[in-house]
Length: 105
Ligand SMILES: [Cu+2]
Image 1: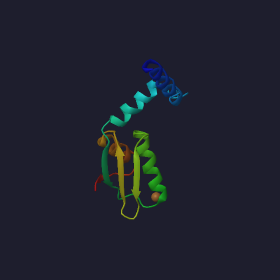
Image 2 (image 1 turned 45 degrees about the vertical axis):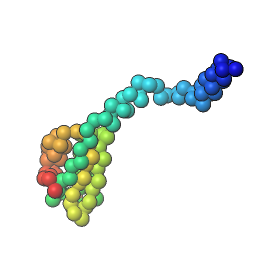
Image 3 (image 1 turned 45 degrees about the horizontal axis):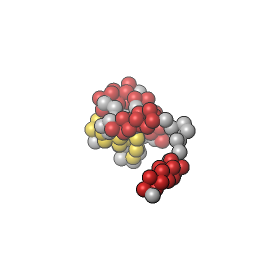
Image 4 (image 1 turned 90 degrees about the vertical axis):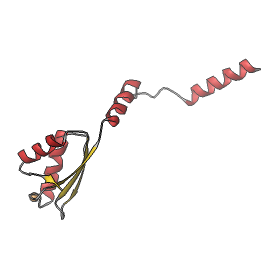
């Protein structure tokens, strides 16, 4: 019977799709909004970055501006590649203040 079939489909769909504890809809929306922000790739030349300690300081400085930033450091080339939704000027200003002036690579 057609009605019965529909009921079965509905209940099996429910059992396959339980509500996920700790992951309410509101968080899902927040996540989606975060990923929809414009992520810009920023490649900077940081001549004062000379060792691993500098590299970790630079990473911390960038992450203090945008905790979600992806920071890739090429120490021999003294470049930092940053994927961030934050304003590039804010990032370079923070690096400057920390003693690591940067310019576009
Ligand atoms: Cu250093």
